[in-house]
Each structure stands twice: as C-alpha cells, then as structure tokens.
Length: 330
Length: 167
Image (cartoon, rainbow over all chains, first blue to last red; front, side, top):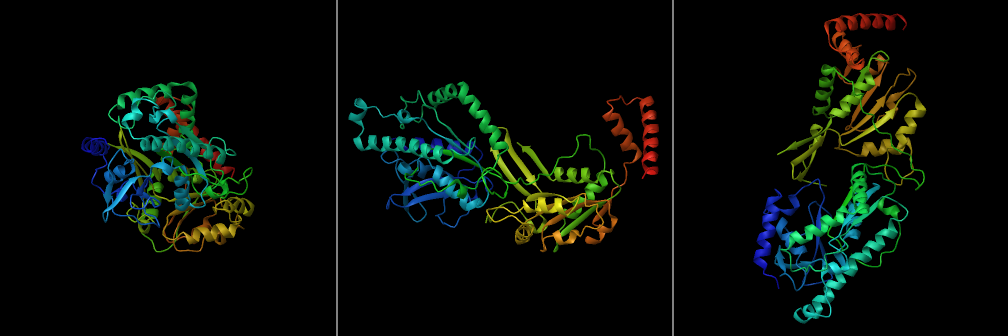
C-alpha cells in the first residue's frame, strides 16, 4: 500500500496548480469542456459510476475534483478507497474501464445525439509491459498474486478496447487515434508515481519517433477541423464484447449536419469569411451588433439593402466573423 | 441541459467557453449558437442550402429544417439569406415560424425592409471617398504619399461615376 497522504497532497497540489481550485465542485468544473472519470462502488462492484463535469440523466453524489480524481485512481490494493457523498466508498473504475472509449462514445451519444463524430483521440499510459508486471521474480514474491492479476487484466483490457475501436472506425480513416508509449515504461511500477521524470523521458522519446510525430500533427489538424461523416449511432452495430482502458480521451464533436450515406453526405454550406481588405462600415456593424444583442421577444430580422457591389454580403460576412472571437487571459 | 453554463439565450446571450492552459485562460465566445448560410439567389439555391440544415438521420427537406430551427427555442441561431435580389422571391415562407432566432438578409431589393421591425435595416451605400481611397491604395500596394492620394481620389471619382452611369 502506497503512503496515501503524500500522494494525495501531491494530487491536490497538481490540481491547484492547473488553476482548477481543488475544492470547487467537480460538476461546476469546466462546463463547456465535458469531462468525466470512471469509478466503481466498492460495495457493489457491478455498479460503475461516471463522475461528470456536466449534467446528465444520471445523478451522482456531490463531488469535488480531487475526490473524483482520487476515486478513479484508487486501484484496488494500491490506494485506499474514498468515500463520496453519503459515505459511499468508491474505487478505481479499473478492470473494465481503464480504456473508457466505449464510455466516451456513450456519453457523446447522449450529449450530442445525432451529431456526427469528428474524431476520437485516446491516450494510453503505456503498453502491456508498461504497467510493470515482472514475473516470476522478486516482485511477485513481495506483491500478492492478485495484484499482479489485476494489473495484467488492466493492461490486456486497454489493448482489447483499442482493437475494438480500430475495427469500429475501420471504415472511417483519420477518425480514431491512439497514442500510447510502447516501450521503456516496463521498469516503472504503478507505485512509483514519484518517478515522473522517467515517464517524461520515455514519453519524449516516443513523441520524437517519426511516425508518432506525424500522427500527432494529424491529430492536431483533425481536432481543429473535424471532418464529420457519421453519427455515433451510424458507426455501427459492432457488437461490443468487452469493456474498457485509457486514461484520457478527446472527442471533437462537430456542428450538426445531416448524414445520409457514408459516401455522399450533402455538405452544409459554411458562411464565407470577409475579404482580407475589408475596411470601414463601422456605423452599420455597430447598428447590427446593437440590434442582435438587444433583448427581444420576437425573431430578429435585419436587412442589408443597397446597390449591387456595394458590399452587402461582405458586410454580413464581416459581422459574422466579428461575432466570434478568442482571447487569452492570464 | 447545462444549468450553470455561461449563456443567456434571452439576451441573445454570448456563449463562452474556456480552456486553461500553460499560457493562461483561452476564452472563445460567439454571439450565435450556430450560423446557417443560405444562398438566396433563387428558390432552388435556397432549398438546396436549407435542406442541409436539419441534423440527424431524418430525411432532409426544407420543411424539416425549418421545423427543426423553430423547435430550438431559447437558442440564438443565425440564418443568413445572402443575395436575395430576385423581386419575385417570397422569402417569408423560409423563415422558421417561431419567436426566437436571428435572420440576416442581404438584398438589392429595398422592399425587403418590410420584413423587419422599424430600424432593423441598413442602406449599404458605396464606400465613402476616404475608405475608397484607402482601399485602392492598400490593394494597389501603393505608398500613401500625397501624390498617390491625389491620384487615388481622381481614380475613385471617375470609377464611381462610370458605375453609376452604366447602371
């Protein structure tokens, strides 16, 4: 059993450093970025719990970020369970949910429904050996066999889900990505959470590999401009046989678009951007902004009229472009 | 479904999303929940573009799209009808029948003003002389010297009159 206090202090520190105050309620955390973690109720191992940062039809006990983080990493025999809500003990989602790809698809389906899926990015903690099952050796003599079994199950589980995802997305190239450090993590055990620098070194080496580097670039492009072709439902009736392994997944949903068939989905037209040399017209842009921002009990309709070539469409494009924005705040 | 999200649909609320990263907080915002662009040149283009609005597996149709938009009460979508110049066009039937949402129309047809509330239209005139001169110099990659500015003014004036006479 790892000394719990130091680990948890470390985790609280990490959470705080990321500017997510650790005592803020998990459910209030990042409303727009939908995130969840999986855990299990220790009283009844059949009950899987998904702690979400958003509201869902399922209710779950009040929970703070660090508690959720604690619950999901309470791997049996490694960390103590945690009690959340009405003294319900939770342990890691572990076997079955270490690669939550299925859960992600389920959740995305509930949240976004008919929206086509943009991409699924799955980030693993390492290949089979990475979880550090050294057999037969000193390790096994110290650690009870059931721990070794649990670990092996977790690792096998992750890869199995990965295989399922590969098959599921076979018809949709450039939609499913998995990044997983394949080598070098063998020596690092779950209990050695302090040896992050070693993990970091192996990860850096993995990322330097040419094919991985190319993959990462592709992932970046796909997340920025997802090409949606199918809804999750349409993805198929591929029968899921096993449960779940990874640790971090990103689903990039795209705006709703009507899918018809895989080959030919009519594209929804996007509003063009204004020409780069657009200038002036501040008075009209201001008027439009004021009109559309004002409270109204009825549908707002604004008409730009004028002679051909006066720049009505460009003005509309400019207005739309200005309605969207990004800004950094320190 | 998100009770605490930073969105106020009633006031055509700006929706805000944020991501924390090493470089601070990245906030992105949009006044509209979704923007749909429709080429309103004629009935065919309008129908073709409107059909693609409805999401999901439902059969695509103009009706389905309009019903879907109308059902999104409390959201601030924007429907753009671009180049609705044809005077025979009955645009009104393509407005989702609901009391929410936003519509933006560009047209040469001044009569379309009647679709809107008072003072919810703008007469887009040609550019004023100063903007036109600036634009010409920028596009010509010409220096803003006094000489060039004088030349630009002359060119802009000639071109403006030519366009007006040929109309």
